[in-house]
Length: 359
Image (tube, rainbow, N blue to C red; front, side, top):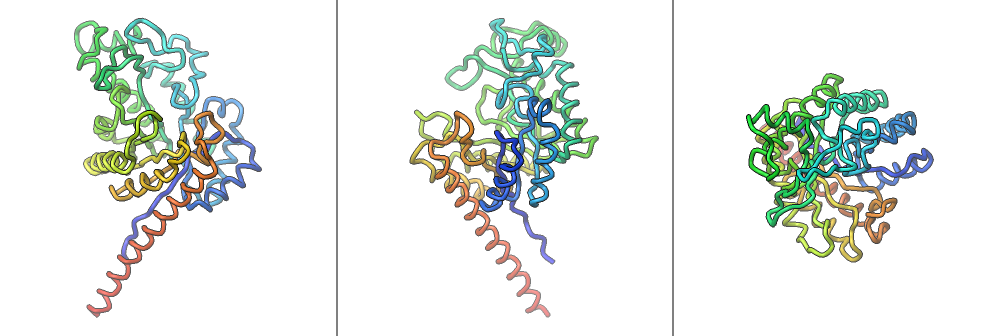
């Protein structure tokens, strides 16, 4: 029997912890042709919704949805501000101008790495099987015309010490090639430690990165993460509507990013995830979600997710017309689902008919 290629269509869900509404939302998600869901699991969820999150994961799986669990705001944005810093004020990221980032954690902090492992224990107990590491990055207060940091993080005393051990000289204030390498090493070293821990607990590790150059890791540098044995799935967020004053043609942008992502995954024999922007959608540009989704599929992606449910209407960055945005998201998923079914059926027909002719 021919092995069929699975199409996984997912959506991010956050902002609601009332189980009655979760139940109706899950049915609505299925009606929009999704078979996966990503649940954010923040520090606040850990403190206030631990048992509720366990029920939400069970409910999602009960409807047949594959569940990914997101480290939402654990180290700071994207997502929440890091509440961990209230327990460990020595773990702030420090910029090269000496200023402190008030909301982001230094990934070289041993205390934060221990805290991350505690979080893994919590989500494991809640039923998580797949951990989604969301857009890891280090801060940049200013960038040059090429998107490279000018004032960068992290330059805390801990990072300065580690830098000197690696390069045998003091960490410079200027953003040099060695600083760039060190920032990428910091992100990889953090994930090497924490993904080994989750991997030992039989959990899959999934990561997505942003495309911009200033973050310490990005799509073009993704090989560095993809090399890790404990990272199972490598992805990106080619969001084309980040700046309302700058128009980016969605099909070309998403296609090129997806193709690069797929090539990296192929080199390292990793699964993939590609995210379609369904938040902050300007009025009148909802149809671009169709073009972006088709672009990801055309470039080879078969794990395609949308951020987020109903255009993220519960957030200030929600889409201007959440009902229309969500309708178009459903249309996009329907198109992909029908297209994939037709392709798979054509493959089955061809192989089945060839076997009949042979016999």
